[in-house]
Length: 155
Ligand code: UDP
Ligand code: MG
Image (tube, rainbow, N blue to C red; front, side):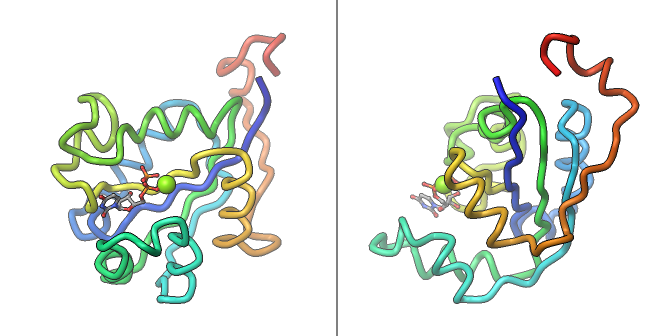
């Protein structure tokens, strides 16, 4: 149990479908603290780096293309075990297979247009937060509701 930060991207499909507010709201209501938030136009270079693990896959060019159609919303979220919590909230990669109640399960019918990216572990979270947020763009603001979100022995 440790306080973690994780990266979420709201993909262009989410921007186009006017789901930005709804998806951000789910993270807020869960009790995750938004510590970074911005609109960004991605380019081929950053996407080639971000999706390097998929470079050999046939859908790689189409995936990058789909991520450049509109700006994306980059979110840095913080909370206890936030990386795993956010992955669980996102659900399985393919929206058709994702459980109802997850973000992809509730809003996506696609294996590619699947609403969010979420870091998949502590190493990728660290690298990805640095990839999408500059120094000074992540804020450590005080949440007065902290005691309602966590037990004393959890903080
Ligand atoms: N993707 C795709 N076709 C596939 C698998 C993945 O277009 O068959 C896209 C999809 O948008 C996914 C992204 O590639 O979110 C990154 O894939 P990854 O395996 O890292 O899944 P994720 O971590 O997003 O669940
Ligand atoms: Mg991934």
